[in-house]
Image (tube, rainbow, N blue to C red):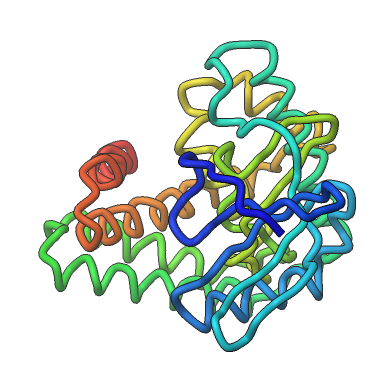
Length: 259
C-alpha cells in the first residue's frame, strides 16, 4: 500500500491506497478500551449499517490499529449552513440511524436509565471538583440525574457522537467513528444534534425525524432536556481538561438555557 497524504485527517488517522486501487483508512487508538470498543462495534453491529459504514478490513491488537475500507464523499460539516444539501444530509442521517436503532431496540427498562444517571453523576462530581459549577447549577444537574434515574427508557445500540462531523455525503450517506458506540437510551443519540444544531435550525430537526420515521413523543421530548444537562456537564469538564474554550463556552451556554 501507498500512503496518501491528507492534512485534513486527524492525528493517528491516515489514508492508504492499495496497488489495485482500493482505498483504506488506518486508525490507531491511544487507549486499549477505545480500540476494543470500536473493534466490537464493527464486528457486532456494523452489519446493521451495511452500505453506510466502513468495513473492518484488518486489525493489530499490539498497536491498537484498525484498517477500514474508505467511504467516499464530503464531510457533512463542510456543507453551507442553510443549504438544501444540509437539510438532505439530516434527512438521510435520520434514515440511516433508524436502521441501527430498529435492529437493536429493546423495550423500556429502568436499568438503562439508572446506569445513565450514575454515569451522569460522575460527570457532575468532576465538574464540582474542578470548581466549574455554582451551587444552583450543581443542584439543577443533580435534579436531572434523578429524573433520568427514575425514567423508563427505550434502549438501542447508539452511535453516541452522531453529528455532521461523522457523516459523509457521496453516492450514499456514510457514517464512521464507532469508538463510543454502545447500548444506551435511544433518545440520547438525538441530543448532540438537538443542542448543537437544531435549536437554531428547527427545519433540520424536522428533516431528520422525517427520515427517521417518527418524531419523539412528549415523554421523550422532556427527557431531551435531561440529556441537555448531560451535554452541558460533559462539555464543561472536557473543555476544562482539554483547554478547549469553544467547548467550555458551549457548556456554559447550555447551562444558562437549562437554568
